[in-house]
Image 1 (cartoon, chains in turn brown, cyan):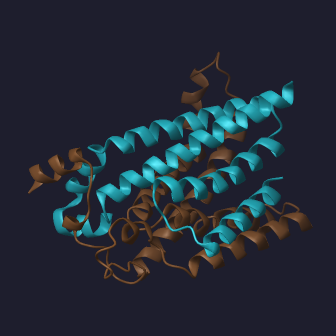
Image 2 (cartoon, each protein chain N blue to C red):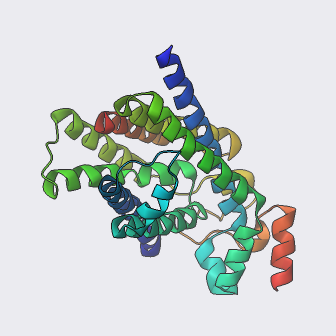
Length: 163
Length: 126
Protein backbone atom coordinates (compact mmCIF):
# COMPACT_ATOMS: atom_id res chain seq x y z
CA UNK A 1 0.00 0.00 0.00
CA UNK A 2 1.40 3.31 -1.09
CA UNK A 3 0.36 6.75 0.09
CA UNK A 4 -1.41 7.27 -3.23
CA UNK A 5 -3.61 4.23 -2.64
CA UNK A 6 -4.60 5.40 0.82
CA UNK A 7 -5.48 8.71 -0.81
CA UNK A 8 -7.78 6.93 -3.31
CA UNK A 9 -9.52 5.03 -0.49
CA UNK A 10 -9.93 8.29 1.43
CA UNK A 11 -11.39 9.81 -1.74
CA UNK A 12 -13.96 7.01 -2.05
CA UNK A 13 -14.96 7.53 1.59
CA UNK A 14 -15.15 11.33 1.61
CA UNK A 15 -16.72 11.82 -1.83
CA UNK A 16 -19.49 9.30 -1.08
CA UNK A 17 -20.33 10.84 2.29
CA UNK A 18 -20.15 14.45 1.06
CA UNK A 19 -22.05 13.69 -2.14
CA UNK A 20 -24.85 11.88 -0.33
CA UNK A 21 -25.32 14.59 2.27
CA UNK A 22 -25.29 17.41 -0.32
CA UNK A 23 -27.78 15.51 -2.47
CA UNK A 24 -30.15 14.90 0.44
CA UNK A 25 -29.85 18.53 1.56
CA UNK A 26 -30.66 19.74 -1.95
CA UNK A 27 -33.52 17.29 -2.43
CA UNK A 28 -35.13 18.50 0.79
CA UNK A 29 -35.10 22.01 -0.66
CA UNK A 30 -36.63 21.01 -3.99
CA UNK A 31 -39.28 18.73 -2.53
CA UNK A 32 -40.77 15.46 -3.74
CA UNK A 33 -40.46 14.17 -7.27
CA UNK A 34 -43.25 11.96 -8.53
CA UNK A 35 -43.35 9.74 -11.58
CA UNK A 36 -46.10 11.93 -13.03
CA UNK A 37 -44.12 15.16 -12.79
CA UNK A 38 -40.75 14.20 -14.15
CA UNK A 39 -39.95 17.82 -15.03
CA UNK A 40 -39.27 18.10 -11.29
CA UNK A 41 -36.01 16.27 -11.96
CA UNK A 42 -34.77 19.16 -14.12
CA UNK A 43 -35.66 21.64 -11.40
CA UNK A 44 -33.81 19.48 -8.89
CA UNK A 45 -30.61 19.37 -10.96
CA UNK A 46 -30.73 23.19 -11.21
CA UNK A 47 -30.40 23.33 -7.43
CA UNK A 48 -26.70 24.03 -6.65
CA UNK A 49 -26.61 21.53 -3.76
CA UNK A 50 -27.92 18.77 -6.02
CA UNK A 51 -25.54 19.71 -8.83
CA UNK A 52 -22.49 19.68 -6.55
CA UNK A 53 -23.75 16.45 -4.97
CA UNK A 54 -23.92 14.78 -8.39
CA UNK A 55 -20.39 15.99 -9.24
CA UNK A 56 -19.12 14.58 -5.92
CA UNK A 57 -20.83 11.25 -6.58
CA UNK A 58 -19.16 11.12 -10.02
CA UNK A 59 -15.83 11.71 -8.26
CA UNK A 60 -16.79 8.91 -5.84
CA UNK A 61 -17.47 6.56 -8.73
CA UNK A 62 -14.15 7.36 -10.41
CA UNK A 63 -12.16 6.72 -7.23
CA UNK A 64 -14.21 3.60 -6.48
CA UNK A 65 -13.34 2.16 -9.90
CA UNK A 66 -9.72 3.20 -9.39
CA UNK A 67 -9.62 1.36 -6.05
CA UNK A 68 -11.22 -1.77 -7.54
CA UNK A 69 -8.50 -1.87 -10.21
CA UNK A 70 -5.85 -2.72 -7.60
CA UNK A 71 -7.73 -4.02 -4.55
CA UNK A 72 -10.23 -6.76 -3.72
CA UNK A 73 -13.92 -5.93 -3.46
CA UNK A 74 -13.94 -7.42 0.05
CA UNK A 75 -11.14 -4.99 0.93
CA UNK A 76 -12.53 -1.82 -0.66
CA UNK A 77 -16.06 -2.10 0.75
CA UNK A 78 -15.18 -2.41 4.46
CA UNK A 79 -12.22 -0.02 4.15
CA UNK A 80 -14.45 2.74 2.79
CA UNK A 81 -17.36 2.16 5.15
CA UNK A 82 -15.89 4.85 7.41
CA UNK A 83 -18.08 7.15 5.31
CA UNK A 84 -21.06 6.07 7.46
CA UNK A 85 -19.12 7.12 10.54
CA UNK A 86 -18.22 10.40 8.86
CA UNK A 87 -21.91 11.05 8.13
CA UNK A 88 -22.86 10.41 11.75
CA UNK A 89 -20.11 12.74 12.99
CA UNK A 90 -21.21 15.46 10.56
CA UNK A 91 -24.79 15.01 11.80
CA UNK A 92 -23.60 15.34 15.39
CA UNK A 93 -21.15 18.23 15.17
CA UNK A 94 -22.22 20.24 12.11
CA UNK A 95 -25.98 19.71 12.13
CA UNK A 96 -26.28 19.25 15.94
CA UNK A 97 -28.49 16.17 15.58
CA UNK A 98 -28.75 13.78 18.49
CA UNK A 99 -26.68 10.60 18.13
CA UNK A 100 -28.13 7.80 20.24
CA UNK A 101 -26.01 5.26 22.18
CA UNK A 102 -27.02 2.56 19.67
CA UNK A 103 -25.59 4.72 16.87
CA UNK A 104 -22.34 5.21 18.79
CA UNK A 105 -22.19 1.41 19.09
CA UNK A 106 -22.69 1.21 15.31
CA UNK A 107 -19.83 3.69 14.80
CA UNK A 108 -17.59 1.58 17.05
CA UNK A 109 -18.47 -1.64 15.17
CA UNK A 110 -17.74 -0.10 11.76
CA UNK A 111 -14.45 1.36 12.95
CA UNK A 112 -13.49 -2.03 14.35
CA UNK A 113 -14.33 -3.69 11.04
CA UNK A 114 -12.22 -1.16 9.13
CA UNK A 115 -9.30 -1.81 11.46
CA UNK A 116 -9.59 -5.56 10.90
CA UNK A 117 -9.57 -5.43 7.10
CA UNK A 118 -6.92 -2.69 6.88
CA UNK A 119 -4.42 -4.94 8.67
CA UNK A 120 -4.56 -7.57 5.90
CA UNK A 121 -3.44 -7.60 2.26
CA UNK A 122 -5.35 -5.46 -0.23
CA UNK A 123 -5.27 -7.93 -3.13
CA UNK A 124 -5.66 -11.70 -2.97
CA UNK A 125 -7.55 -12.57 -6.14
CA UNK A 126 -4.62 -12.19 -8.57
CA UNK A 127 -2.21 -14.50 -6.72
CA UNK A 128 -5.08 -16.93 -6.39
CA UNK A 129 -5.62 -17.03 -10.16
CA UNK A 130 -1.95 -16.92 -11.02
CA UNK A 131 -0.26 -19.14 -8.49
CA UNK A 132 2.91 -19.61 -10.48
CA UNK A 133 4.17 -16.14 -9.69
CA UNK A 134 4.54 -15.83 -5.93
CA UNK A 135 6.29 -12.50 -6.44
CA UNK A 136 3.04 -10.66 -6.94
CA UNK A 137 2.39 -10.06 -3.29
CA UNK A 138 0.52 -6.92 -4.06
CA UNK A 139 0.15 -5.77 -0.49
CA UNK A 140 3.39 -3.82 -0.95
CA UNK A 141 4.54 -3.82 -4.55
CA UNK A 142 2.97 -2.87 -7.84
CA UNK A 143 0.69 -5.50 -9.40
CA UNK A 144 2.12 -7.83 -12.03
CA UNK A 145 2.89 -6.61 -15.50
CA UNK A 146 0.15 -6.33 -18.04
CA UNK A 147 1.17 -9.51 -19.83
CA UNK A 148 0.52 -11.55 -16.71
CA UNK A 149 -3.15 -10.66 -16.70
CA UNK A 150 -5.58 -12.78 -18.62
CA UNK A 151 -8.29 -10.40 -19.68
CA UNK A 152 -11.33 -10.63 -21.89
CA UNK A 153 -10.77 -10.90 -25.64
CA UNK A 154 -12.34 -7.49 -26.16
CA UNK A 155 -9.83 -5.91 -23.85
CA UNK A 156 -6.97 -7.43 -25.80
CA UNK A 157 -8.33 -6.00 -29.02
CA UNK A 158 -8.49 -2.56 -27.43
CA UNK A 159 -4.99 -2.72 -26.01
CA UNK A 160 -3.73 -4.07 -29.30
CA UNK A 161 -4.98 -1.10 -31.23
CA UNK A 162 -3.57 1.34 -28.77
CA UNK A 163 0.05 0.32 -29.13
CA UNK B 1 -48.63 -9.01 2.80
CA UNK B 2 -47.02 -5.60 2.93
CA UNK B 3 -43.99 -7.03 4.67
CA UNK B 4 -43.68 -9.71 1.98
CA UNK B 5 -43.49 -6.93 -0.61
CA UNK B 6 -40.96 -5.04 1.48
CA UNK B 7 -38.67 -8.03 1.95
CA UNK B 8 -39.09 -9.01 -1.69
CA UNK B 9 -37.96 -5.50 -2.59
CA UNK B 10 -34.99 -5.74 -0.22
CA UNK B 11 -33.94 -9.06 -1.78
CA UNK B 12 -34.09 -7.55 -5.29
CA UNK B 13 -32.05 -4.52 -4.15
CA UNK B 14 -29.42 -6.72 -2.51
CA UNK B 15 -29.16 -9.09 -5.50
CA UNK B 16 -28.84 -6.25 -8.00
CA UNK B 17 -26.27 -4.39 -5.90
CA UNK B 18 -24.16 -7.50 -5.36
CA UNK B 19 -24.24 -8.40 -9.07
CA UNK B 20 -23.33 -4.80 -9.93
CA UNK B 21 -20.42 -4.67 -7.49
CA UNK B 22 -19.06 -8.05 -8.59
CA UNK B 23 -19.22 -7.18 -12.30
CA UNK B 24 -17.65 -3.77 -11.70
CA UNK B 25 -14.85 -5.32 -9.64
CA UNK B 26 -14.24 -7.92 -12.36
CA UNK B 27 -14.22 -5.22 -15.07
CA UNK B 28 -11.63 -3.15 -13.21
CA UNK B 29 -9.45 -6.21 -12.56
CA UNK B 30 -9.49 -6.88 -16.30
CA UNK B 31 -8.59 -3.27 -17.04
CA UNK B 32 -5.72 -3.49 -14.57
CA UNK B 33 -4.14 -0.98 -12.19
CA UNK B 34 -5.50 2.28 -13.54
CA UNK B 35 -2.65 4.45 -12.31
CA UNK B 36 0.10 2.25 -13.75
CA UNK B 37 -1.77 2.01 -17.06
CA UNK B 38 -2.31 5.77 -17.14
CA UNK B 39 1.38 6.46 -16.58
CA UNK B 40 2.40 3.94 -19.21
CA UNK B 41 -0.16 4.52 -21.96
CA UNK B 42 -2.06 7.70 -21.17
CA UNK B 43 -5.53 8.57 -19.96
CA UNK B 44 -7.27 7.74 -23.23
CA UNK B 45 -6.06 4.17 -23.13
CA UNK B 46 -7.57 3.85 -19.66
CA UNK B 47 -10.88 5.30 -20.83
CA UNK B 48 -10.91 3.17 -23.98
CA UNK B 49 -10.24 0.00 -21.98
CA UNK B 50 -12.99 0.73 -19.49
CA UNK B 51 -15.49 1.63 -22.21
CA UNK B 52 -14.47 -1.46 -24.19
CA UNK B 53 -15.20 -3.76 -21.29
CA UNK B 54 -18.61 -5.45 -21.41
CA UNK B 55 -18.56 -6.28 -17.69
CA UNK B 56 -18.37 -2.55 -16.97
CA UNK B 57 -21.66 -1.87 -18.78
CA UNK B 58 -23.35 -4.95 -17.32
CA UNK B 59 -22.24 -3.85 -13.86
CA UNK B 60 -23.45 -0.31 -14.46
CA UNK B 61 -26.85 -1.67 -15.55
CA UNK B 62 -27.13 -3.89 -12.47
CA UNK B 63 -26.19 -0.95 -10.21
CA UNK B 64 -28.89 1.11 -11.88
CA UNK B 65 -31.45 -1.64 -11.33
CA UNK B 66 -30.35 -1.78 -7.68
CA UNK B 67 -30.73 1.98 -7.29
CA UNK B 68 -34.23 2.15 -8.77
CA UNK B 69 -35.47 -0.95 -6.96
CA UNK B 70 -34.24 0.70 -3.76
CA UNK B 71 -36.48 3.67 -4.57
CA UNK B 72 -39.43 1.31 -5.09
CA UNK B 73 -38.70 -0.67 -1.94
CA UNK B 74 -38.49 2.58 0.01
CA UNK B 75 -41.96 3.50 -1.16
CA UNK B 76 -43.31 0.13 0.03
CA UNK B 77 -41.58 -0.16 3.38
CA UNK B 78 -40.19 1.99 6.16
CA UNK B 79 -36.93 3.78 5.51
CA UNK B 80 -35.64 2.59 8.88
CA UNK B 81 -36.04 -1.05 7.80
CA UNK B 82 -35.29 -0.97 4.07
CA UNK B 83 -32.18 1.25 4.22
CA UNK B 84 -30.18 -0.62 6.87
CA UNK B 85 -31.39 -4.08 5.81
CA UNK B 86 -30.40 -3.52 2.17
CA UNK B 87 -27.04 -1.94 3.05
CA UNK B 88 -25.91 -4.54 5.56
CA UNK B 89 -27.17 -7.56 3.59
CA UNK B 90 -25.27 -6.21 0.57
CA UNK B 91 -22.04 -6.29 2.60
CA UNK B 92 -22.59 -9.92 3.56
CA UNK B 93 -23.74 -10.90 0.07
CA UNK B 94 -20.67 -9.27 -1.46
CA UNK B 95 -18.36 -11.24 0.82
CA UNK B 96 -19.94 -14.53 -0.33
CA UNK B 97 -20.06 -13.55 -3.99
CA UNK B 98 -16.51 -12.16 -4.09
CA UNK B 99 -15.25 -15.47 -2.71
CA UNK B 100 -17.15 -17.53 -5.27
CA UNK B 101 -16.99 -15.40 -8.41
CA UNK B 102 -13.88 -13.26 -7.97
CA UNK B 103 -11.79 -15.93 -6.16
CA UNK B 104 -10.88 -13.46 -3.46
CA UNK B 105 -9.43 -15.06 -0.37
CA UNK B 106 -12.03 -14.10 2.20
CA UNK B 107 -10.21 -15.19 5.35
CA UNK B 108 -11.37 -14.93 8.94
CA UNK B 109 -10.11 -11.36 9.17
CA UNK B 110 -12.30 -10.28 6.27
CA UNK B 111 -15.34 -12.17 7.52
CA UNK B 112 -15.06 -10.42 10.86
CA UNK B 113 -14.65 -7.08 9.11
CA UNK B 114 -17.68 -7.65 6.85
CA UNK B 115 -19.83 -8.81 9.77
CA UNK B 116 -18.81 -5.92 12.02
CA UNK B 117 -19.44 -3.36 9.28
CA UNK B 118 -22.80 -4.92 8.40
CA UNK B 119 -23.90 -4.85 12.04
CA UNK B 120 -22.62 -1.31 12.46
CA UNK B 121 -24.43 -0.08 9.35
CA UNK B 122 -27.66 -1.70 10.55
CA UNK B 123 -27.32 0.07 13.91
CA UNK B 124 -26.36 3.44 12.41
CA UNK B 125 -29.15 3.63 9.88
CA UNK B 126 -31.78 2.07 12.14
